[in-house]
Length: 344
Image (cartoon, rainbow, N blue to C red; front, side, top):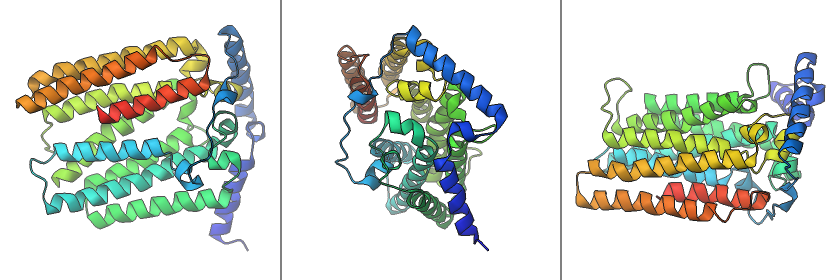
């Protein structure tokens, strides 16, 4: 008799090793049609296979690459900034709550991006061959252990904190991560541009902002005071999340098209999606500069207005240098968006 652990492991291996052609008949026909549409779009927009131009040498350890460092750092900055919004003067109790929040958030982040790599292994072999699962450095058992262990540690920290907002934030983030990545009927939201964008927006702009804010306050969700800085943070992160959801697919257009995933980039082309993202980023940073008039001190006023002005200028100046025919150039600019937004 197989143990439950062995059964789960065998199931996980099956998921990794199966191809889209091995699925049920109803989905197989749909995916075949999507693949054909994707290939036609590549021809229509004269998109070349530039994925080979990406040079991602495995300089970092496999576990670090598996955790997707830019998302880890983004989660850390988001949790820290929204937590500081909730308090006027950090104290020992705050740092204790913050420590539990950031550690549990990072563990959950690793689990979610790991789950995405599990179901994107075939696509990543084209778009991101440097990732451990795509390159073969990690096998199914290793990936399963890391994901399960990360979820376990995250939930234990949430329960130990005795914070309802933190537990709800972790559980709901995982739920949306499953809906985004897992390839079963009614899920795999990443295959639909609207659902994929909504998923990322809900998690990063709403769940993370409000959940960790309430956790830092030490209160529940009901009756909280939504301060101006939190409202603007939610607004800014809504736009930023849309940009991330759209732009992350631009360098990955070849793998997505081959697998029949109808991202906005596949449907409308690289140039149009790129311009949409730039317009949204310009809107976000312009609103950020205008928000400075609500600052209560001169220091905050100057930091807010100049910070957003500098951040927006850096993005626009670098956008002019992007080679839209190069996946490496697009990926570099995508990473710049993460860095600039987190710092400014």
